[in-house]
Length: 540
Figure 1 (cartoon, rainbow, N blue to C red):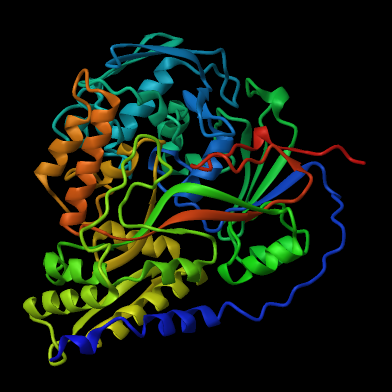
Figure 2 (cartoon, rainbow, N blue to C red):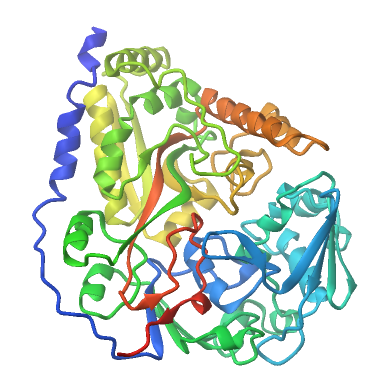
């Protein structure tokens, strides 16, 4: 068939159709906000958390809650910089031996928090028996024996972390990792109370059993409704906590709840209501540029997507400008995994980025034909995504883009509720999935380590020893920062050449925040907020 039959000239029309659903909002003039309850803050959390067990958690909804109830060795400030938490200070010997000195702090049950609590929890994180989503995290951080423990080849007791005394914790690494303290801001590195975990098993996360180390305690958990927290009087920094109670909602209709003054902070703003929010709630719409990239992840264990020609063809056909317009958030088109606002990153573009739409379409048709697909043998597959209106609109627009460009591309859309979606991806029972990754810390390895062959979060089933070696080389002793940047750029080039993912956009978070909330920041690109830093403006 003539190649020009499958040009992308109609894509703008497809994008306009996808965007048409975003119009026609009714703008309501709200009455002046007056706070009635100064003892409780209500926060949107989008979905039900997967687990409130730090080591068994892996999603952002869980992280938002655990950060309120637990502290780690370090935390982050309003700008996303690493600051002391349960560790008052730390130092290193050549970035290979890191020693943390703990402050005097107690669990919510009154018992002292010790270095042994951390040793137990880090071993638990890495132990394959735990089934932790981030079991490889300490291996990525080059902690001694972490990879061997994770793979079941060594006992957890051999992990390179030990208590020098009750208040001193030490990590030994196999390579110099200058950003190691930054890695410890994530909730799955936080300590848990050993006796409680061993006594109650999986039920230790129930409100009547939960033992906290952070600013709040777990008061109530109503599944698919809300989670209520209350101030932890045993917290070392309790005087800083000015809001006594917090309720996190996992139900939808956040915009309507906010409009009715039933919610103080939304998790997000629906894409078709952002313009309305800007008009209706002037000064209350907050935008944060995140260290998050959204993409399609082909499952390379599936025959169809094991062919790099298919992955490359689908990748170059995507009009990312249309996809970002559909979101309405101000997202930026993505051609690589690492966001441009990440420290120490280098921007690398695929060879086809500068091509015209017609040239991309012609090359994609050629690749798909070589892979054996045609009108008589269409390229049919399911795109998995979680139930979410924004996701639905974006994937619908993407389907239109592909089908308009090459009619024998016939994607079907499969949406699942969040937990089911997570389970489906975990088991690898999908062809291609709409997914995203937010860095665990502000350094490119936080985005790129997920592509390592042995990383549990490698849902692509991708393995390339050259990429693994390139990432290992970033930790060579004595390497200069600019040399590390170049290696990260090389890693991105490898990922692009293999078309491991189909990058779509780097995300901007849009939230609504009541005007009397003080301390809310839009400067932390990881959005690791803690309520202890928030307060209500004094009652007038």
